[in-house]
Length: 414
Image (cartoon, rainbow, N blue to C red; front, top):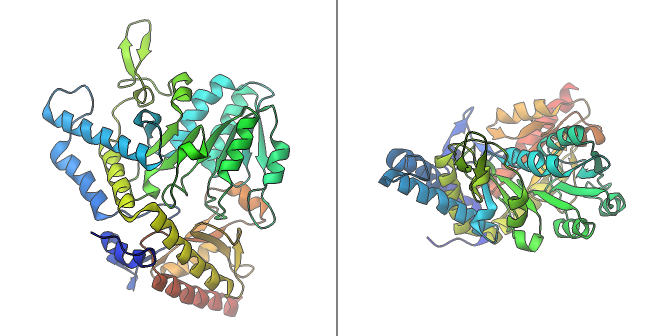
């Protein structure tokens, strides 16, 4: 199949997603909750089902045909992910349940073994809870201190403040590539370069960037990168950690058990080579295979084309939101494909989302797992519309019309 021009991507791609054909409350479904989780194309669903229907067996060490087929498909997915982000080798890709587990893996292995009192962990105020709580636990156990980079007035990463906070006590910088609330794209390459100049390691939370734009870990030069499969057209329960091979070799195991060992004796064990040292027990085999299918699907359209299409769609959304009365949008004008916003004073974001749902429109509401950021903005929550490759201009237009109707209702009753 020949890929369409970037500006025609959405209407063509949406036919691959059967869930989008349904109606909600007798209205055609508009799914604008992609920052929380993406939908799954037929190719991914078929790959997951094929494994369980035809190839199901445990991976590695098996001598029979089903195990060999499952192992081959599982490791092929690792190779696909490796190439997708331009890792140096598949051994630098660790399959995890999700990005949260991947961050915890780094925090509980590298963090607990390397950090000590007076060391500093540098995060940002816009981090997802998954990139705050694990480091809070490590700080409590090691005596290391947490420091937070603020945002600028327009909701961007404050590079000047970051440079002031960065110092010889900084041992790790862990930050989000794209904010799931503000939509800002952080200057990741410069942040990483400055951290390395101070001798600090860097973890990049790429959950909101890997599904939407080309990612090259060798160009970024991050020490670790995490992503969740369910945000990039794959099933839930599968994600991955990228790590530089040298650093992964130096890290102690995360979990103990089968699969991650070389030899086990009564008084000690030796550990398997990468990547298996960090994959204890039976993995999510079908989900990992489906993740590989999701990578194939994204590669079919091309990440440059997806990024270009979403950029044009985002511009259309932002222009429309800016024209609505009583709507406040959070984050900079140059952004990824999501918009967190609030309505008239006294109207809760949950009420906006509930009324949009009656029109078949799915948006997220609440704090989006960024409570510290919302507190800094003086908010108890926001509504969020987030886009993906299968969304269309027509959906954005209908969303804007229905949102204005919802806002008009609240203006009348307030």
